[in-house]
Length: 72
Image 1 (cartoon, rainbow, N blue to C red):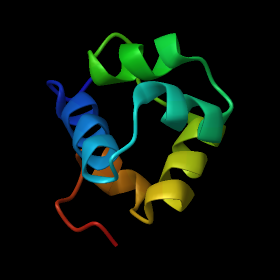
Image 2 (image 1 turned 180 degrees about the vertical axis):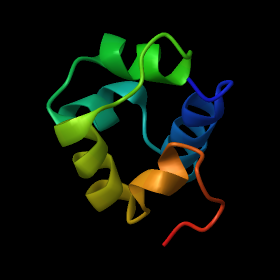
Image 3 (image 1 turned 90 degrees about the vertical axis):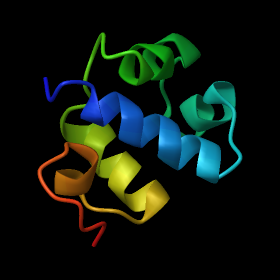
Image 4 (image 1 turned 60 degrees about the vertical axis):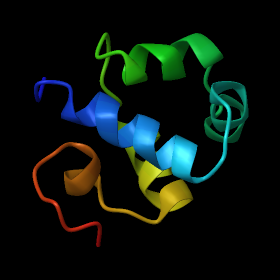
């Protein structure tokens, strides 16, 4: 894990989009508990979910994963 950067970025993206965890979970096809786990550094999104997050928020996977500060 990247010292909580994934959790921080997902929380920031969700809140800046004015979404609840439940709403984001519904859009991604996962449980609200899964979103909670991502936002609290208990799990990190992989594969299909990461791709859905990229598309949904219009940011890159490397940005979400903390590999770059460039959102594109």
